[in-house]
Amino acid sequence: MTEKPANGVKGYILYNIFDHEYFFRVYDHGKHTDYRLAAEDIKVEIISGDHLSLYERENEDEDVENKLDWSSVYLGKSKVPSAYIKQEAIMNDQRQLFDNLFAKIKEIASQFETTAASKIEQVLEVADQLTIKVSDQLNHLHETMDAFLKKAQEVEQRGEVMADELVAAMNQELAQLQKVMEDLIAKLKK
View 1 (cartoon, rainbow, N blue to C red):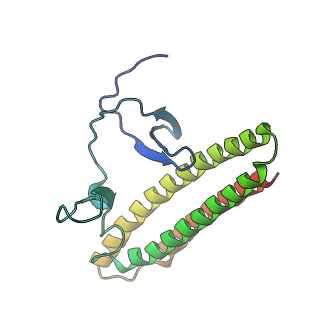
View 2: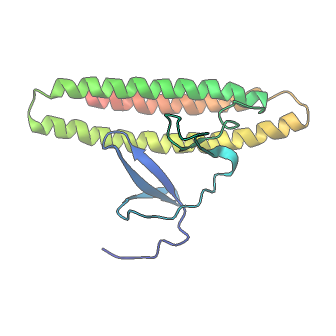
View 3: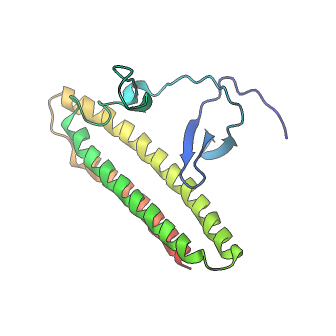
């Protein structure tokens, strides 16, 4: 293995729902490299603007954990441009689609439990491909949403009505994600 300094490298910490592990992804000119998190104490600086917030317990008796999550502004829980609130519904649809896909993968995987180990390995291989493709598509969707939010804020500041093209662009992104997921489900069924 070759070693290079990690200081200053920008990337994303992602969660693999199949392995239940986090990994670090770095994008470079349209390609990405994934890194397993091996160090147990990594310093992180959040540079996502107002998209993320730290949520802390108000008192020690609360039965909740402190968490880093999407900000209430980003989720549409406070004053945000009206067009962005419409996009929250689209994102909820996308989350539901992903949940349905994951349930379908689990169902298909359970059917393979009685077959040979090679079949299970094939399912896990396709599931890994699915995780990477869905993660890439979600990252692209988030980048599009960031641009959409910026445009929505500009439009709302000028007092104009939100352009239908922006909503259509987000719907197109969602349709592409759905197509990727449907293709992978078809692969799993084979």
